[in-house]
Image (cartoon, rainbow, N blue to C red; front, side, top):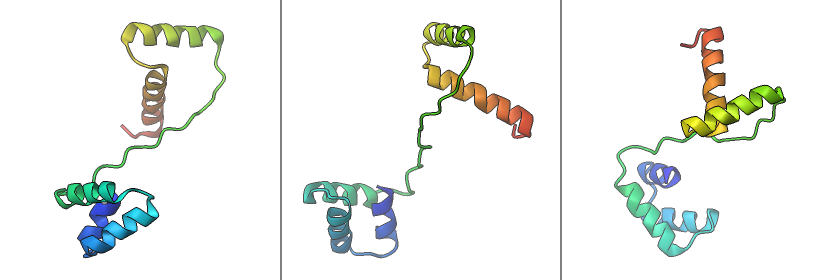
Length: 97
């Protein structure tokens, strides 16, 4: 969507944008039209979310059990809890919040 938005707002024609999307993104003509139609109505590009990656660490078995238990009780995922905890520590120790 952001690619389509950018192309249209840089002045590329709809026909050029459609052709580029079909070739570069390997999508159907119908899907390219959908993207162009949606991007044409956008006021701003969509926010780009942070990409998730696996990050393996070794922690004590007791701590892992506590984190899993807390996740089950809170309805959150282990990943969400871990991410929030790490962000909190980094903000506190690096003066970012």
